[in-house]
Length: 430
Figure 1: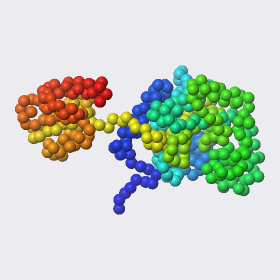
Figure 2: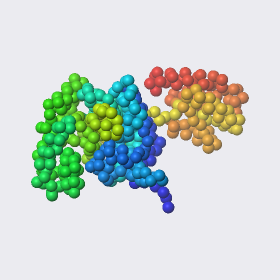
Figure 3: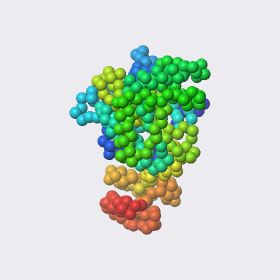
Figure 4: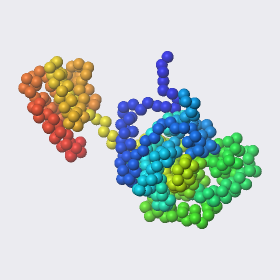
C-alpha cells in the first residue's frame, strides 16, 4: 500500500517552492519598510486559548479545530489562526512593557482547520499575518490596510478591491445586537440550525452565514452603521479620511462582519476581481480587536491586524498571469573527467561555494556530453571543465553558455575570475 499525504494537505516541490520563497522575501522586505518585526509562536497551543480568543460561537471553534488530548491529559489544539497566539505571546512575554509602542509584529506559518478541501482552501495552509498592539489611533488602522494592499500591489496584482466596515464599540454593538435579534426572530425557523443558535448567542454571526446568505431577511437586516454612537462614527470617519489622504480606494460594505468574535470598530477585506479566480474572492481579512489582550490576561491594550493565505495569494497571481522573477537557475556547473580531476573538482566546488557562488557538479560519473546536457537543463551561466590535460597545466576551461566563448583560467584565479564575471552579468541585467 502506498502512503499518501493526508487529505487537505500538499507537498510543495522544487519548481514551486521558489515561488513561495520569492513571495516570502518580498513580504518580509515590505514589513521591514513598515517597521514590523517577526514573531514565531508554537504550532500547537492550549485549546482554551482559541475558545477564549477566537470565540465559542465561531465555526472555527465549533467544528474546524484539530484538537487532541496529550499524554499529560491536557487539551491541545493545532493553531487555526495566528492572532490569538500572537496576543498570548504578547501578554506572556510582557511586550506591553516595551518603551516603544505600538508593538508591531508579523508572522508566517502553517495553520490547521478541518474543513472540506477545495481550491485555495486546505486543511493545512500557510498564513501571513500582521498585528499592531498598543495604539487606538485610527491612523494605525489605515496603516494596516495600506500594508495589506501593498503586499498584493507590489507583487503585481491589479484586480483588487478593498472593502471596509465598522463594527462599533461595545455600546454600538449591543444596540445593533438587539436590533438583529428583533429582525431575525420572526424568521428563526427558516434559518439553518447554526444560525438559530447564533441568533441568541451572537446574532452578528448570522450575517456571516454561508448557508443563509440568500435568505430575503439578510438583505433587509439592520446595518451596524445605523447604530454607531457618536464616538464610533467619528472613529470610522477618521479611518476613511486617512485612506482618502493616502489615495487608497475602498468601498463601505455594511454587511461585512468578519468571522471571529474578537473584532470591533474597523473590519476589512481585500478581494480579487480577476476573471477565473473562483467563487471565493476574498484574499485577506482583518480588523480591530480592542479587548482581546484583556480577555487573555493582559492589561487594556488596543490592537488591529490582518491575515492572508499564501496559497490564495499565489492563486491570484496565477489568475492575473503575473510572472514572478524567482531565481531558480544555477550560476555554474563543474564538469570533470578522470579520478584526479574529480578530486580537484570537489575541492574547487567547495571553495567556490564558500566564496558565495551558486554551483553544482556531476555525481553520477556521467560522460562529458551527458554532463553538458545537465548544465543546459539547469540553465547555468558558466560551465567549468576540468580534465587530465587541464589538471597538468593547473588550469580549467570556463565556458560562457550564452555567448559560447571559452576561456582558460588558472586554478588559483578561478574564484576571482567567476566572481568578477557574475558581477558583470548582474550589471548587464543577465
